[in-house]
Structure formats: C-alpha cells, structure tokens
Length: 84
Image (cartoon, rainbow, N blue to C red; front, side):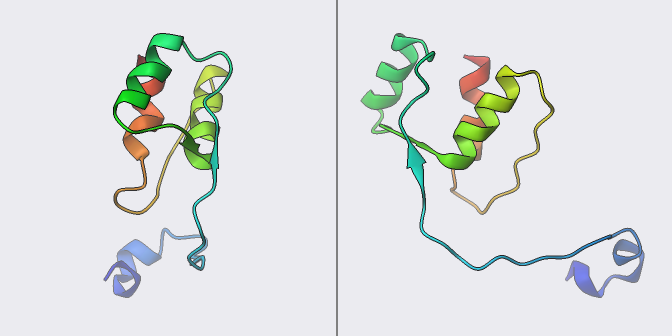
C-alpha cells in the first residue's frame, strides 16, 4: 500500500478519505452539440455526473483538469466529450 511507502509519503502533503455518497447528476450543458447529446442518449446516457459536468466546463474555460475517481465513474467522458 502506498501509505506504507516512506519515499512516496515523504512527497504527500495531505491524505484524505471521503465517505461514499450517492451519485449526483445534471442535464447536458445547453451548449452541447445536439448530435453529441443524441449520440450519448442512444447509448443510454441521458445526464452527466456532476464531476463530468465540472470537468467539461473547466476544459471549455481552458483550465487544467485532473479527474481522480473510482473505477466505472465516468472519467472517460470527462475527456471524450470536450474532444468531440
């Protein structure tokens, strides 16, 4: 485990663990291309998780983005949607 690795931990400033919480979602952004939202809906995606919306908005503002979430949380859409 990384927390037991002294070399790694010497570089860590803070270590936090957040409790699990229910997913929160938002509708697609109003400025999303209709063809893209339709393609997502055909694949069963009708809303974005809040972390996806925040990442996509940050990219649109030309901000740097790092997404670190659990497996199968939708990270891929955080970079795929802005590219498309």
